[in-house]
Image (cartoon, rainbow, N blue to C red; front, side, top):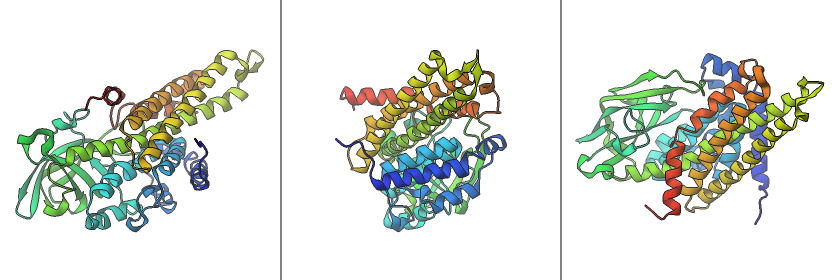
Length: 382
């Protein structure tokens, strides 16, 4: 058993770490406060290959594996969690299904510009009444000659307000239940009947846009279908499994940022004549943070290794996602406590980490659903 990273993995991790420290951390607070999506940052990330890490080079990606993806996304999220989720959606929720289920023509047309960072993608799954229960979606697509007529509203779509392309799930045969769900890859800018709906005001990850996608008699080409009709639900589950490794990595980056800042602050803040780092109560908090961070990283790297090697990873991705996101939330709460009053102000980034951490326990499968997935796997229930 070898726990060492390859030289390539070390190189890309260190490259992402430098990028986070030099390009993201100095502007993360401003991006959060202004709710600003930074095209300049995304362009620089694309130049590093970060917007399509595990996508083959022939489709505009960097051609690396999912371990590299997890390592890079962790560091990016350590610098700015909003930028981390922008990267995650392009790679996981959009890039993964198009790469895995798309035809050669679809990959060349719809994947290449996103993986190379020339455009953004998004994933149109969630609806007002279909979140943890995606089989309850109401969006429909009806075949009409050489086009599908798409109707419905998608909710809480990360990158939805800036995306040119989207993978969209809709019901194509109501009589078949979840087996009647189909996924499509859509050029939003070229689709009449599409509009961006409400752009959400959020607690955290405020430098990434979250919006509604609204389709009213939207006509999309017949060949926009991903795979076969009715295969959408299975595609969806596989896509979310992969995406959870990304969200776990985002959460790990937030947790690492919390620990780094808690350590730094505790060494310079003096109370009762000595630095906070010399008080055992705070030492214990930071020891617990460090232990859970290391455990989270091991879970994430295991899941990423399994995916890279074509092995089942549903259980491991769910474990990594809920453990890492709970770790991030706990680390942020303890981090605010260690900084005291300063932790509650925008003078320090800890309050931002606390706001950003919360969503990692919710999106791409709530942590309650993650426990259901794990239980189903260990009990042999499918």
